[in-house]
Image (cartoon, rainbow, N blue to C red; front, side, top):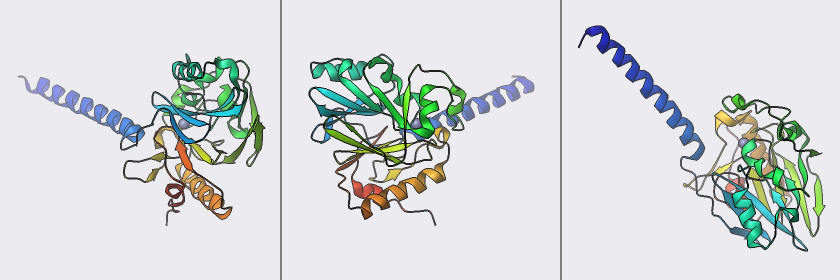
Length: 258
Ligand SMILES: [Zn+2]
């Protein structure tokens, strides 16, 4: 083989390996070492977790056959959502409200299928859910702004919204996005992408590539745990958006970085 050809092949090979390693690292940062979402998990009576591919969403029974969703999944055709509603012998018209943990499209796509749902997000993420603004994380920003056709009501930190028989409390957890929220309903704390559960039993921060500000995200988690602990709030489970569920102690074990 000619030396120049050998040299070119060596360089090409190194570049291919480097790109493959980067893609691998990016994928691992999303799913590596995470616990599995358990489809149909019921952390509290009337609160069911549905697995929609690599994300989950919550279905909360609010009485008289109506439900509220916490997030709406990544699938714009809503296969998992429609299957869950069919299991209840119902259709998307029974969804009266959807609360978004944040405005990334993998948590909002199913919302357009629910004609009667009032949509809620924290004020700072309304433009993101509506697609008037694109995601800001270092890699996810390539998605850009794309109108979703959704009309979203803004919530303030601490807002308690009553829908049917249930009250849903929004708590700001800025970091992954500016308007990231945790929702507490029936003792189940939905965390969206503010945290994930690892197989070693520890809580992890969201992947850097998809997050606005990881230091802020960590500070929000610490503050959330402390606040609910000081209130002696009843939290029977924590539910991250891409992994299996955890216990309240997993959240309160998150400590500030020295
Ligand atoms: Zn996200």
